[in-house]
Amino acid sequence: MQTPLATPVPVLRLPRGPDGLNRGFAPDGHRAPLKPEVPEVLEPPESRESREQQARASLRERYLHSLLAMVGRQVCFTLHEGVQVIAHFGATDLDVANFYVSQLQTPIGVQAEALLRCSDIISYTFKP
Image (cartoon, rainbow, N blue to C red; front, side, top):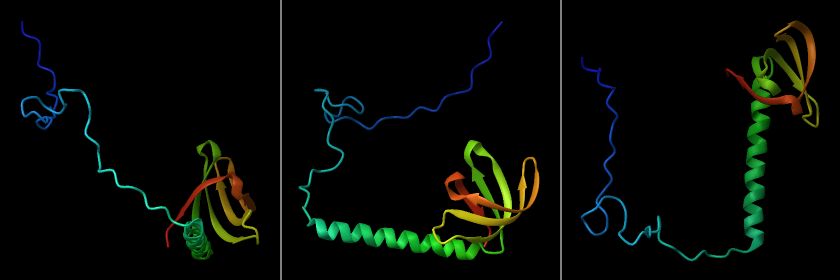
């Protein structure tokens, strides 16, 4: 009695090596560099810091725009331990340390109003 054939496994064919006979590896065991080594151009620290500051300012502006877009919408928050809660976003405090929400749906019930600490929030999603 014959045993059934196992599901075929796809095979990846490596390209020919540098000597043209073997596949994928140099005969001396050294790998070719992935990209040509180009000497790095040293930039002044002031320009690098200003670029980082511009990037931070852009990210903060996008974050604040997302907070404005959330006002009055239903938002799904993911908290520590993977707990997901849904609420209507109301406002945030000046330091963006707490979110004021209403109709907070938790695994153990619904709260009419609540404050969510931002340090407890892993992520949030909402439909614009």
